Every structure is written in C-alpha cells, then in structure tokens.
Image 1 (cartoon, one colour):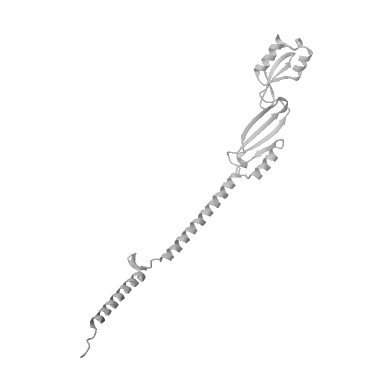
Image 2 (tube, helix red, strand yellow):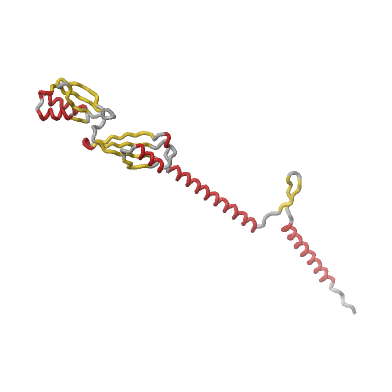
Length: 221
C-alpha cells in the first residue's frame, strides 16, 4: 500500500514563502526607491535624506546661525565702543570760571568746533590742551569736556560804585569784564569820610543793582 504525499503541507509552505517574499520586496523597494519629481518639465530623481542626514543638516544650520550671531554681536559691539569714544555734534564744551574774591562761578557752554567732530578722545584732549592752555581739564568724554580756571577779575554783570568827576557813579561789567557807565549820581565825593573815599577809589562791588542803590542811599543821607 503506497503512502500519500503530504501535498497540503507542501502547498502551505509554498504559499507562505511566496507571501514572505512579496512583503520583503515591497518594504525593500519602498525604502530604496528614489522619489521622482518634475522640474522644468523633466523628471529628476532625488533621494530623501535619512533621519541621520536630517540631524546633521540641522546641526550645521544651527552652528551657522550661532556663528553669524556672534559676528553681528562682535561687530555691533565694536561700533558702539568706537562711537562712545568719538566727538560728535552733541559734544559740549563747558567753561567754568571761579572768581575767588567774590566766591562766584561763571558757567559758559559752547559747541565743539566742527573740525574736531569725529575725533577720538586722545586727539580731542590734545586739541583742548593746545587751544586752551590757561584752563584745566576736569572731565572729558563724548558728551562734554569741562574746563576750569580761577580768576582775580571782577565777574561779568557785576555793579560797581566808583568816582567820576568828583561824584559817585555806577558802573556795570560786561561778559569780558569791561566797565560800562550805568549812572552818574549827584552825590559828591567830598561829603564822604576818608575811609569811604578809599572804598570808592577801589570800587565798591555788588552783584545786584538793588545792593548798589542801598549803599548810595546810605551815602546820600
């Protein structure tokens, strides 16, 4: 009696192998197939980057941006630093004169000369030292340079009582310290005592006109 061949088992194995081959081929083809795109009417094959390649590309882009940012910061920082050290149109020159005998200070502000605009601080300092030899530099930066000096002269806009043609007269100093006649009084010099005459000869100096008239009132009484 002959044994029957296990046809069912063989058919099952064949079907299984065929299905496995199909599935393997499908996924292999899907992973390796080049994507076709249309460019200018022509089909061009382009490979999609792998996950690893995408990570590498992202790192390169990030590093590039960081380097560009650093360069911009360094450049802007240098420009700001340079600008901080330059003389500009907004830079002021401040002159302070201390009148020691009168305990008074005159403050005058001026713009910097046009020919020094754009100079660095070292050049500007040298210019100031050479141009204003009688002044001391107290402060110098891009905003202002402060110059200072002491003076024994009469401050500007002060009033004085002096003698004019044997009478008392009132004078006023201008910005340059020059005396200008304000008023000649009718008070004769010879009515005063020797001490007061000495004061008048030297000049009685007051800051306001009210103070001057107060002294004249005493002399006329």
